[in-house]
Length: 52
Image (cartoon, rainbow, N blue to C red; front, side):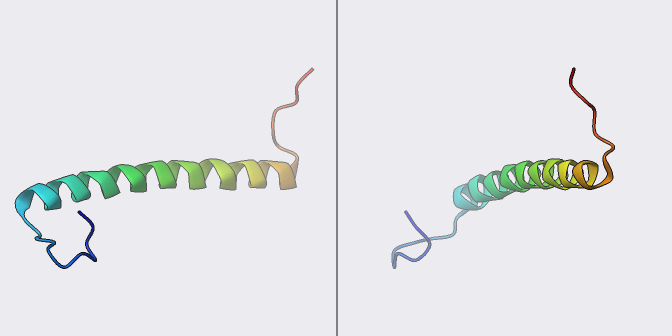
């Protein structure tokens, strides 16, 4: 079930599943990184929107 278990076999099902899984995790991570970086940039430059 895990790659560090001795009986692990890299077949096409595992490759497709983990490929799609890490693709989705990469997209989510890139989006979160962008949001955090933009929030930090806007905070440092006082260019964010104000709430009334």
